[in-house]
Length: 477
Image 1 (spheres, rainbow, N blue to C red):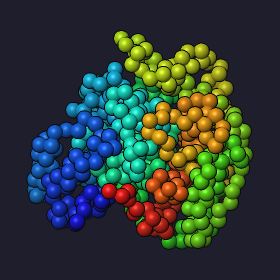
Image 2 (image 1 turned 90 degrees about the horizontal axis):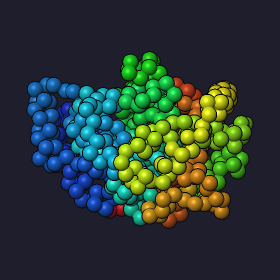
Image 3 (image 1 turned 30 degrees about the horizontal axis):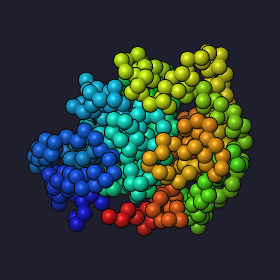
Image 4 (image 1 turned 120 degrees about the vertical axis):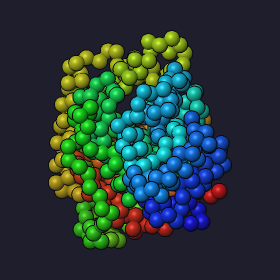
């Protein structure tokens, strides 16, 4: 194969298993690509030494020769997001206070990916403490967009998305609280999926009952890769008691008639509630026409629920979850000087939160979930943009206004992602279009009912089949 780094993980796995390519050849090609492109984009940190990784690849080759196939990721190089633990690598979360934080074990997700055969080569960048959808930190600096390093990669899985766009990795993991798997995927012309709440178990958080708004999940350049990685990551674990018992199945097949008569509810900007830059909605609406050409029915619909109330509910939940995470670090020496102001703001906002406020927000969230459930009785899929603005200057901390409307918090510009999060629904971001300058991508969210991850992936694969040449586009060298 002429360019191994342009292939997805499923293709590479098949080549390796047939003996047409060796794990060593793949590792060399991957490292060559990283050494050439990472200095420009700053998406991978704590990369293991070349000699260590080449030795691991040679060992994977020996296993294949002996007939010992670990799994579909056997010999595939992967860098884990720097918010999840991988044995032998620091989990810094982009925070200076955690620069030497060596975990004692792999996270559940990392362990499952290793069991499927991957070789962990390093970590992908994340904003400090994973907060904010723009990947920069004082520890690692800013990560450039895979299509234009002068603008943001998104976040918090920005390093992973840029690595995929720049062909430094064939597949990647990420995590998502407020669009962290979705915004960077949309801005880098790749796929990212926030799975159903509980689909991917997590351990290590001090709380295993309430702290479920964040989830890990897959990213990739093909739907098959995203689906197969989600199968690998998912499944109940007793350490995560609310993780789903039902297994996720994927055979890669899609019914050609799936889109015929499919009912798609286009939520657009929620009736003007969401500030949205010019061109964003148009790019998504143009993408939806491909669904219509295949027989789907697309209709712009109202949310039907008070969007301002959803936002206030979100702020309370976020205070309850993000604040204590930051608070645990605020007790460390130098915290006030070394933790970014946005994170300290999250902590300070959480200090006055009462049980009654949280209880009422939980009731609003419950009502919103029930409302979304009724929407899915009429619509098969709901669609929103993956972001409200185009990638912005990489030197900014966050956009202060969108389309003339002031952003009153550092994350208000990502409000478009909270609906799937609060309802616990699976949301798959697919490439939608480009800015008129031709180099800034935009994605759109395909949101399905709670638990319908496989269905959403099948819809995504049908869309992939309609736009194969468009999705295969890659950045200019």
